[in-house]
Length: 171
Ligand SMILES: CC(C)(COP(=O)(O)OP(=O)(O)OC[C@H]1O[C@@H](n2cnc3c(N)ncnc32)[C@H](O)[C@@H]1OP(=O)(O)O)[C@@H](O)C(=O)NCCC(=O)NCCS
Image (tube, rainbow, N blue to C red; front, top):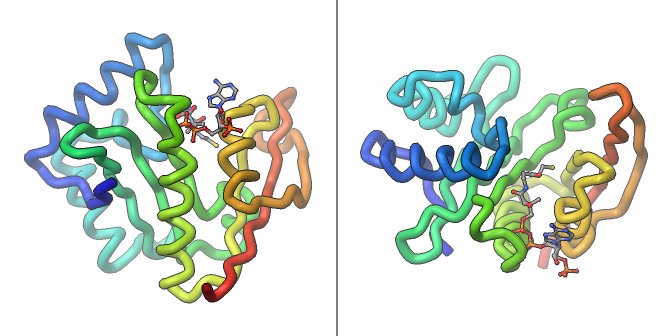
């Protein structure tokens, strides 16, 4: 797969990615860093700025487009510079895969790639959060070595969030 930051000329493929979610009845785009509530050019500028100089609340982060050949498969958010309290609420890594490409192993591969980036950035562990009933995401995390550390309903009442830790070894 190819992973890279979004650019202005990606607008068409990103609009198509969002449209597919809406047509599938989904109202939010995971790991998109506010894509649908922003003007596209400003979103691209913010994402690229956050990769270089960071954001005052979230530190430096990467929002990567994930391609298989030239098809946009998913979005991968790597928040490798989060303050610890945010790491334990929103998690260090987020991801989403377009509906037509799910259950083909892409999220598992994307998370594995993200863990490599975090290791390169000097992290020794990452925290991931997801809803307990999001079985595909839970499995993605566990397949990448995630160990459950806690669960609560603080984020959205009535929906249990789970938090996992993945220890990053040097190999
Ligand atoms: C969660 C999500 C990213 C998983 O992506 P994916 O590419 O389908 O995941 P993978 O193909 O790598 O599958 C990972 C595991 O989940 C399983 N899985 C995939 N879809 C599933 C489903 N709908 N129901 C149950 N298990 C499922 C796979 O079988 C695999 O487990 P296995 O290897 O033991 O069989 C994708 O469903 C998605 O984008 N959902 C909406 C956004 C989201 O929830 N993001 C995560 C927020 S925490």
